[in-house]
Length: 273
Image 1 (cartoon, helix red, strand yellow):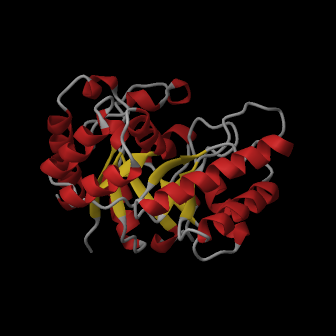
Image 2 (cartoon, one colour):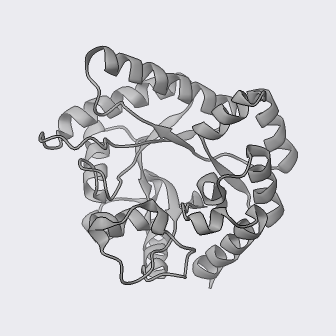
C-alpha cells in the first residue's frame, strides 16, 4: 500500500504560494495541501486561479485537499446563509484546482449550548449536497481545542448520522492527543472514511489542555505514538494522502525547501521505517 506524500502549506509559512509549490516539488512531494488563504493572497497580489493551475501542472503536484470551510456549524439566520454561500464559493474554487476534498472545520465558539449531533449532521449533509454540484466532498474535522467537536468519535458520529458513503473525517495525531481521544474510540472507522491523514508530532512534557497548533514538531521529534497510529491506519485500509501539517514558527523562519525536504525524510522514516 503506497500513500501519497503531501505538504500542507501551513508548514512553510510565510513563503509565497509560488515558493511553496516549488519547494514541495523540489523536495519530492507528490501533492500539496493548499489553504484557501493561499489563493486569496495570491489573487490580492495580482495572480489568478489560472496561474495557480499552471503552476501546479508545471511542478507536477496534485491537490488532494484544501482548508477550510468555516461558519457552517455555528451561524444562524442570514449569517448562516452567508456562511453557506462562502463555503459554496470555496468548493467551486477547489474544483477549479482539481481538488476533490475540502476540510470542514468545527465551531470555535465557546457557548453554553452543548454539541447538537443531529443539527450538526444536518448542516454537514447540506455541505455535502452543495459540494456534489462541483464534484467536491467536505471532510468533517475535529479540533482538539474546539469547544464542540474535539474528539474523533464526535466527528465520526456526525459523519455516520449523515448516512452518506462519501462523507469522511480528517485524521490528525495532534488533535487526537490534544482532545484526549484515539483510534480505539472509533473501532468501526474504516480507511475509506478517512478523507486525509495529517501528520505531526508533539514534544513531551507539555500540558495538553493549554497548547495550540504552534507546538507541533516534525514526525519522530516528539512523543506521539506515530508508528502505532500509522500501523492502525494502514490496517484499516486507508489509501489516500499523508500530509505534513505543522504551524511551528521556528520552521517558518527557515528555508522553505529545507523544511519541506527534512519533513519528507522524517515522514518516510516513520511510514516506511
